[in-house]
Amino acid sequence: MKTETKQPDDIIPGFDAVAESRKWKEAVGREIAGMTDAEMDAYFKAAAERYSAERHEWACKHAGKHAHAH
Image 1 (cartoon, one colour):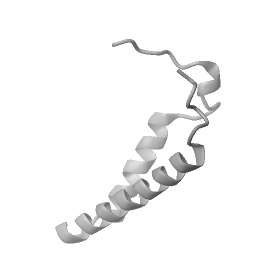
Image 2 (image 1 turned 180 degrees about the vertical axis):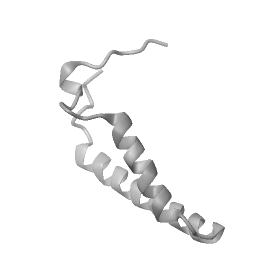
Image 3 (image 1 turned 120 degrees about the vertical axis):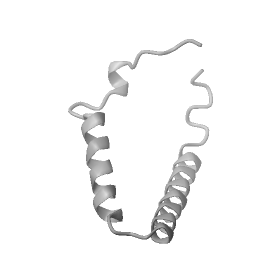
């Protein structure tokens, strides 16, 4: 499988993905601390539904823009 190297226009200046990931993990950890299993299940189910809706909205908005990119 061929891999592609990120091009300069694919990179966001000053963005540190590792640091952002760490912040997200720490924030989620604080938010779910003390939750029961049922509460955590509900929390993550709602987050997954929200993410799926956002991803669908983005895909609809950008449909066709990259159809000939390959």
